[in-house]
Figure 1 (tube, rainbow, N blue to C red):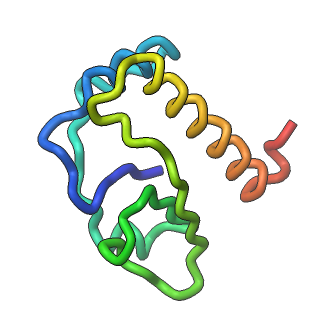
Figure 2: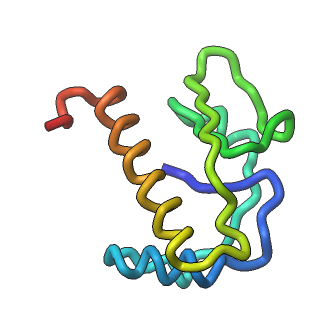
Length: 103
């Protein structure tokens, strides 16, 4: 799994760091990364969150655009809701891609 953006910020949102830490996931040492064409080419599924034409397109790849609220400037309650929405979508995606791991 890779995470990157078409216009990454200089640092990770500290509220997102806090929300993820609540779930036992420490992302504090991570840094935003630029989405590179080779990363998309090497992926089986590409999940975008509003990057539009800035995201590279490769024929034959599975693409989904998840419309989510932007956590930038949001409080912890809103960021928790975004985190939980992403978790649900990831779980659904895993079940679709790897049905033997579902349930």
